[in-house]
Figure: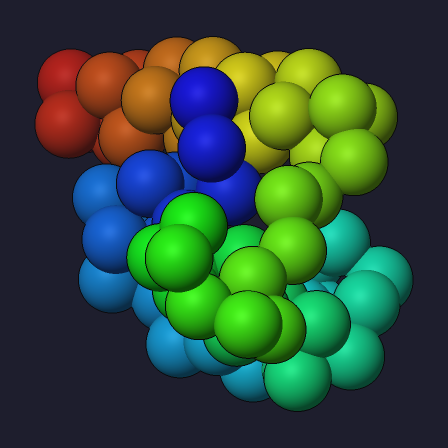
Length: 68
């Protein structure tokens, strides 16, 4: 999962995304630029893995919270 997809799924701001991934807000914003943009930057592969893990944990947490 791309970190930007995670941000959109949970309605996070770029500030929240940057805090979760330990990068600057400017860096997180670059992840959302189109590939044709001059300042586009792919997130590191670890960011994809981290986004997947965060999504899995949040999905489980939200599913559990709905049952109560």
